[in-house]
Amino acid sequence: MELNENARVDTSQVDDRRGSGGGGGMGIPIPIGGGRGGIVGIIIAVLVALVGGGFGLNAATNGGGDEQGDNTSLEQKCSAQDALKQLDCRNALYVNSIQAYWRTAMPEAFGEQYRPSKTVFFSQNVSTACGAADSGVGPFYCPADDLVYIDLTFYKLLADQLGAEGEFAQPYVLAHEYGHHVQDLLGTEAQMRRQQQRDPQSANALAVKLELQADCYAGAWAKNATGTADDKGQKIFKSITEQDISQAIDTAEKIGDDAIQQRSGRPVNPDEFTHGSSEQRKQWFTKGFTTGDPKSCDTFGSGA
Image 1 (tube, rainbow, N blue to C red):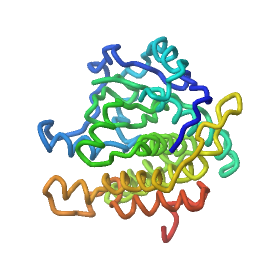
Image 2 (cartoon, one colour):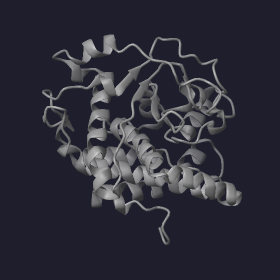
Image 3 (cartoon, rainbow, N blue to C red):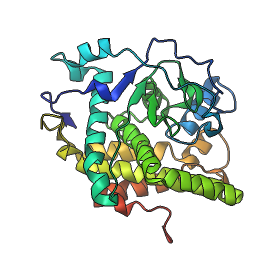
């Protein structure tokens, strides 16, 4: 993967709340369950990472989510010549690419206009319209405020504890979360929640379908990422290699439900899956990448 050093990093698509105190005591805490120490904490963090849209929906009216970060430092850093050496600037540029893709792809594929969403960079804890969260929940999307949230230290956990060390794991994670934003805009997420209420026994299976569709959407973005450009027409990516795609697939496999269960020392139980098995996550990301068409990502269709 090679980013274009001439591409402008649009930091207005990011809300930098790092160091703001986070407001973790506001709202209703996002439920994550279990303990925090050692391997248990690692397992829980990854179990809830990349969920997007599932946390604390009942807390939407309980405050939070109205904070504003201070992007001054980020804007200065990301306008410097060596901006792309900085983790936060690279991630802001990944966000730019993902949203540039969906501005075109969503109307073409679904006949609906794309509405941009910001990514919130936070540290340790954060207040959202879905409730209060901390770094332990991993990256997530809150449909109540239409924002993506990430503590960038998550990537270190992903690399050090799960072995997903490749750089392309990072835009894959973000593209997955923006897949949830697209589902929110299209009404897919709300429809899935209604189905869960009508058929509670299928709640996990429906959640898996939502997650796998977000993986597929991430694959569709990856296929088209080299065609995305900044607001002045500069291409954002110079190249994306087969190795990059392999890194995304490797990440998807390492955060499959079966892999998580095995890592925690528990037997694999498909009835408890909420995100999909390693093979399913690989399959749907690959389908999105192979076709490059988000319309191919109908995980809810018969036979899917």
